[in-house]
Amino acid sequence: MVKNVKDDRYTVSPVMSAVKRGLDMIGALVCLVISSPVFLIVYIMIRTETPGPVIFRQERIGYKGRPFIIYKFRSMIDGAEKDDKPRLCSEADDRLTRVGRMLRDHHLDELPQLWNVLKGDMSFVGPRPERKCFIDDIVKINPDYELLYRLRPGLFSEATLYNGYTDTMEKMLTRLDMDLEYLESHTLWTDFKIITKTAFYLFTGKKF
Image 1 (cartoon, one colour):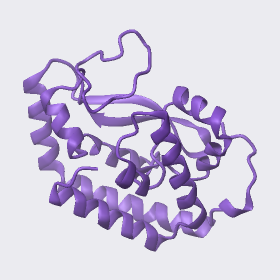
Image 2 (image 1 turned 30 degrees about the horizontal axis):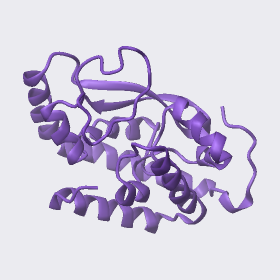
Image 3 (image 1 turned 45 degrees about the horizontal axis):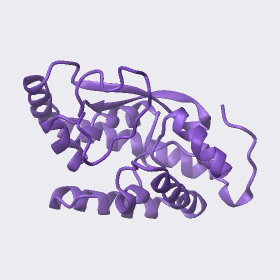
């Protein structure tokens, strides 16, 4: 659970939170319906290439410091962490499947998180959720990470657009700085701009 971290700069308006939650629910439902053919195609591609589940499930820490299960299309071989040692995915990671690499390059592996948004685990825009073991490492360097628990984690974030997948501690700390800036000054207009920019990158094939 979230600790009592106080900083008036990062106060989140209850009204804005309620409006954002309503928009998230509507948007997630519409996107799930529209993207259903993509879900089917990706399902067939993963199922055909390698054995194992199509959907990858992993515990992350979210709103108010509560754990939740995040959903992704599986992009690695089944049992990629059999030794139970957390390991960040790198660009040249040999655990990635051919289909999985393509999905990650275009962030299509994140599509099942629309269900997380619909359920209320996540929002369309917010700090990307992280695993507890990595959060513990980040907090040792910058305890302000716990301020992010005031927001639902996001499917999209400005930090991801400019920082990409976080495969090093340096990137994690850079992402934290950007997420704290978002927390301090975010508005619905800010969210709209991040969603629009992300959609443009995805549709034009720009990697981030």
